[in-house]
Image (tube, rainbow, N blue to C red):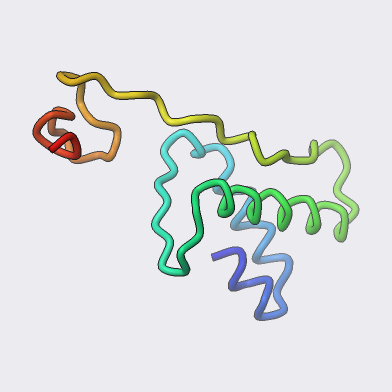
Length: 95
């Protein structure tokens, strides 16, 4: 959403989208119709965020690095899978 708003010439809407998305980063799921990897999507998010913070002269907001999202926890064989299906790993994506 933020990337589309930035391309459409509305940097304020782009920054609001990024700012609102940051607190929920533990629940982010990545679906990439453009073939981006998760690392590339996070890198693009961080670069756009940093550019907009600098463009607007916002103080007190730290720059984001590519590693700000962290890694997805590894699901055990009998643990609920983090994809959100509610199924156990062996019944969902573990097949």
